[in-house]
Image (cartoon, rainbow, N blue to C red):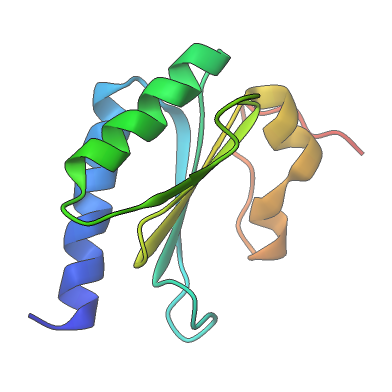
Length: 116
C-alpha cells in the first residue's frame, strides 16, 4: 500500500468519525506537494467543548496507530495529528478568529462568521 493510499484511507476514517459525531462545516485541504508534515488537513467545527473532545476521542480510537492530541483541556481548538492527516477541530468563534483555511488557500464555509 502506498503512502497516498494510506493517507486516503486515514482521511476516509476521519471523515466517517466527523460525520458520526455531527461535525459541522468540514473542509479537507490536500497538502500534497505543499507540506512534508502531512498529506491532508481537515478542519471542522463543533458547538461545544464536550463535542470537540468527543470528536477527537473518536478519531483517536478509529486510527490504528498512536495519535497526538493537543488542546483537550480548553477544547476551543483541538488538534489531532494522525501522521498522514492533521485534524483541526474548532468552536465556531475560534475558527472564525484563526481562519487557518485562508493560509492554505481554502475558504471558510458560508455559515462561519469571519472576524477581521
